[in-house]
Amino acid sequence: TAQRKIRNFAIVAHIDHGKSTLADRILELTDTVSKREMKDQLLDNMDLERERGITIKLNAVQLKYHGKDGVDYVFHLIDTPGHVDFSYEVSRSLAACEGAILVVDATQGIQAQTLANVYLALDDDLEILPVINKVDLPSAEPERVKQEIEDVIGLDTSDAVEISAKTGLNVDKLLEEIVAKIPAPTGEIDAPLKGLVFDSIYDDYRGVVLSVRIFEGVVKAGDRIRLMNSGSEYEVTEVGVNSPKPLPRDFLMAGDVGYLTASIKDITQTRVGDTITLANHPAEKALPGYREMIPMVYAGLYPTDNAKFEDLREALEKLKLNDASLEFEPEVSEALGFGFRCGFLGLLHMDVVQERLEREFNLDLITTAPSVTYHVYLTGGNMVEVENPAEMPDVSSIKSIAEPYVKATIMVPNDYVGAVMKLCQARRGEFVTMEYLDDARVNVIYQMPLSEIIFNFFDKLKSSTKGYASLDYEVDGYHASDLVKVDILLNGDQVDALSFIAHRQFAEERSRDIVRKLKEIIPRQNFEIPVQAAIGSKIIARTNIKAYRKDVTSRIHTGDPDRRAKLLEKQKRGKKRMKAVGKVDIPQEAFMTVLQSD
Ligand code: GDP
Ligand code: MG
Image (tube, rainbow, N blue to C red; front, side):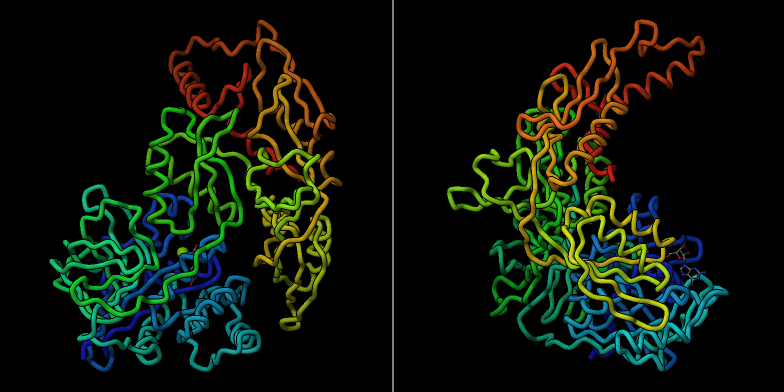
């Protein structure tokens, strides 16, 4: 059957090992994209991805490959992100494939996300093809890296292709390996339809566009489909594949990866992981779907203009279609008004969500400092979960507080083990063990509070190891800690959105730091503003923002009209990101000061 000619695979790797560049070469070699249309990291089509040079979203494309055996193959390739915050995109991609291409940078070797991705692929029983990339670089050590893959992961590397995704060297050999090693999909074409929804996006004209992997049966325009978990039914308006532009097709059949539209406007009815089937000839059982992701950090998102609250709700709902790991629920802040408490997989994820909401939905937002979920045990015996420091119950009613811990695995060259241990210890880490990977590198494993990881731990780790360390972590239960809530008062008024939770031992130092930073960030006004940090009613740090003198008002003294216009524009933009709390204007950066402290 036609299925014998199909190969479905995802490209996975640690960040920057060359996944997207390899996808470029494959698109080129298969003439999927003409030389004229070709550009670097073509599949990173979001502005944000191009600006930051990272892949954020999975991207599935169909290509035709004319094999050396004379057969025309159909490949469905899925490029995936490498950053740990987007690993949900990877696991969803893998569930749509039979194989995974594991790209390993020949100058770096195995890194933390290389391992994490291998485990994900093994969970799905995928065929893993290791590929050694960047062999054009003088510092490449393909033999050493192959040995490492054999020793650490236990994959056979005797057939691993040594490529340069940049120059295209040996990418043709890799294509033949894909044909030879990755199994063709199986699945009955005559069986009732079973398709996995692995991604979705909202389109103003077409409604929800579902990315689907068909496992059994056939689907075409005009079919009435049912989403098996939500129970909702729709008539299919179009099916097709991305190549990489959408190309409508007559049908999608078992083994295919493509898209489907059905004028779905009710966005709450579609969830990734759901199974589509035919309404009048349904499958008996839905596909297993996906594990729900548990957010690691929470932060408040508020429109700078309170009238935009409903717009923000709609934007979040639409964005969730394309970002299944996003969670949100409404909350109210005295300082910021109506907004949403959102759950994210990490700080990069949070940053990307804010940027996407602002760019794709034209909103101006204020984000509060991220927090983890605390388990607060009350003297009455109950436990409450607290995601927002402002909602911490009164000290008098708290028996104890527990916080989430992670098992952090840090992969690092021997020389930096000391530096890593010092950093982890300073972040309340408890040493667990050390595993030697080969004679040059070790895995250092620590148990640490998640909150210590989210406060710029990664940057510190990179800077103290000259960029050589890589980090992976997984949640490892809750442990009681001596935590306190610190409130910030401006001009005597408590600003709920600035409250934070800290270990008692570090509360004072951190408060002094934050108070000092707030003094720098908050613009002077025509009266003196006391800035204070307090635990309960006890002030633990304070400073004053002096009133401005008459002659240094923010009025613009310049004769040059161009410059004047520019300055005014700057002020206006800055103003947009300010929130007046009582009589004090607080800029966006203030809400993030907690993060910059060390
Ligand atoms: P991804 O994060 O895995 O998708 O990695 P990218 O494809 O975005 O590549 C990361 C960086 O490595 C980019 O600057 C690429 O130009 C570079 N790169 C990728 N493959 C090669 C290669 O084979 N040789 C060299 N010299 N650089 C490469
Ligand atoms: Mg990429």
